[in-house]
Image (cartoon, rainbow, N blue to C red):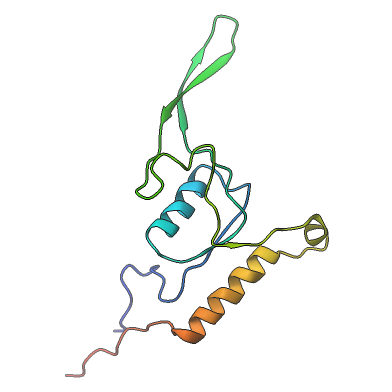
Length: 133
């Protein structure tokens, strides 16, 4: 029998999130939670800022579908402020059009650099061996 972490997918090392202007809805919420809970830094650019969810599609007599805002998001430290603003990164890294055209992801590269530096400073934990009988 081999010892494992529980839950098995729990990170044993540093967590670094990558976000940009296309991170919206749950992308906003996850990055806000990572920052609020102190799980790790957010790298990239400010998220989109769209967290109010919609539901209940109604069909009008002409066939048009309409929706209504229904679900709002509140998080301690942000209050209602993620909507219409987004989440500011801890480390701002802008992906330039030239980077995109060249196939470079400078935001991911910086996040990896930060994670590796954090691993160097605080190596990932491993479960101890099971006691022998």
